[in-house]
Image 1 (spheres, rainbow, N blue to C red):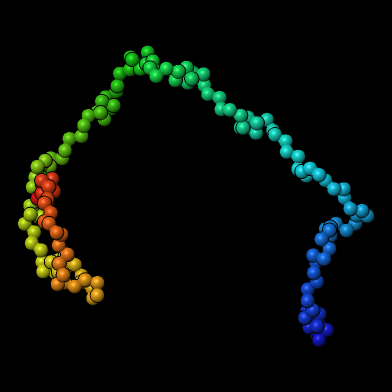
Image 2 (tube, rainbow, N blue to C red; image 1 turned 60 degrees about the vertical axis):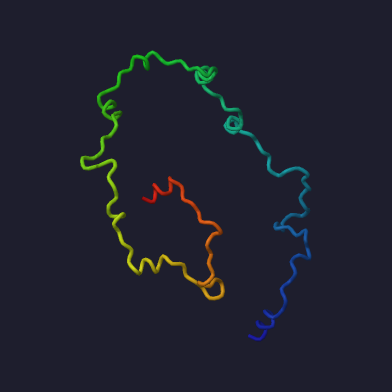
Length: 151
């Protein structure tokens, strides 16, 4: 057991001492040096077709040659079905819908003291004091659009 411990305690051998070391040992001499690439690339017909320019249909190119497109005879004589006519009609509003109905609940709502407390800004020690006023130098005027949205 001591000999095994001594063997494991030895440093590992440096395998990079022999940089030309081959993985095949049964050769009598080294293989010849190759100058070019080891893999010969061959372009198959399918790959060359994929690399080539995309061919468009001749009818598509003719129709796109001018900005004015011709309407086919079949499209000129087409007549929509009853289902298409039904789907083209605008949808009517529901029976109980009123277009200019006022929002009564929001106009009569009263804020509770807790909501008023939560609406106030929180003052932190050291940053701001509640005694200093952060009011703008001149009062801001609201636009008529903003007043309309607020009501």
